[in-house]
Amino acid sequence: MPLLLGGCVAGGSSGDGPARKVAADFFALLASGDTDAIAAIISPDSTLVPAVLDKEFYASTIARPTDAEVVEALETEPGTTYVTVDYSIEGEDRSIKVAVVEVDGEARISGWLDETLSVGPLRAPGGFEVNGSLTVGELEESIQFVALPGVYSFEYVDPKGFGTPDPDGAETESFAVEFPVEGPQLVDTVPPGVKALGSGISVEPRLLSSVEDEVTRQLAQLVKDCSASALTGDDCPARLVTEAAEGGAVDRTSIIWTADTKQVSVPSEEWSFVADYSVAFNRVSAGGRTTLDARYEGVVVPDALGKPVLEVAR
Image (cartoon, rainbow, N blue to C red; front, side, top):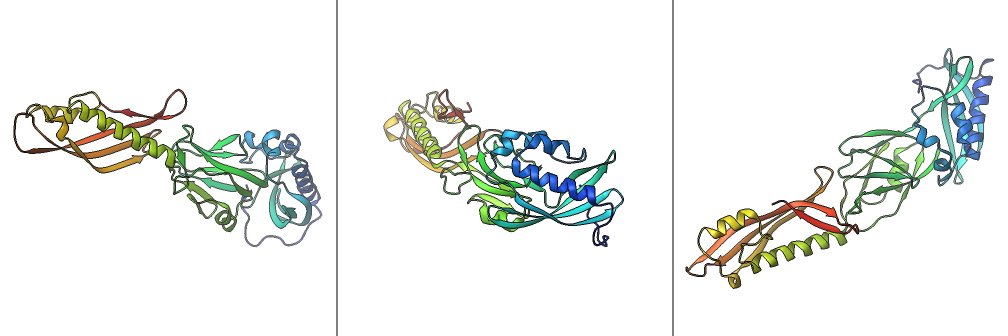
């Protein structure tokens, strides 16, 4: 979008008629949802991606501009005019400055102020699903997302179904984001766990509490099965098996595991886990107590039914 410069020419001019008309047409088409016709009046320099001009996608917005009125046109330089348009959305009054440029002798919509929402960088797989169909966001990267004026539904979606932005691990619902984007509105609409800063949103998801409970349960089962094998079985950490075998057979009835730390994080595309323990036990043929360190680590993956399963590194 062309830069809006200070010291602009005030008031209208005899040449601002096409700019006013295309701005009025633009808002009439927004109200009707005719994105095919909108695409025809968008300038080639626009940052809109084709997906946001899909008719079904825009029809799924929570609200679209209505009752638009062109109130002013300012030509900032030859071939570029900013048109001020007042309109309503969900009963609230709004005002927007639309950049209109000349393309092959025709007035075209180039963009508007505050058109961009910064998304990310995300700290987990997945992204924000917009209007239930378009996913935006990149792992460890920030992207710029531009949408037509309107109110859109956003919801963080983990493709594995394990993550949530909620700090307590609860499932969350979608929230509304209005375009053009204004920071104070974002702060008022984002749910707990979604961070709004300026005209951007980001999220650092954690496991759903139900998934974390399942991770804890499966770790406890691994510990139980390892003890049942007297620290020799495949369910034991390999290093623990090696170190426990060095002093002779272990008395399985004497084994006590103490959990030191457990952490689930997302340093890559997977939910990774690390669980550290202290394992104390007696030998069958020797006196005294032995204590060794043990660690389970790996990733949490979905099984055929989508349920979380620990894939332990051996």
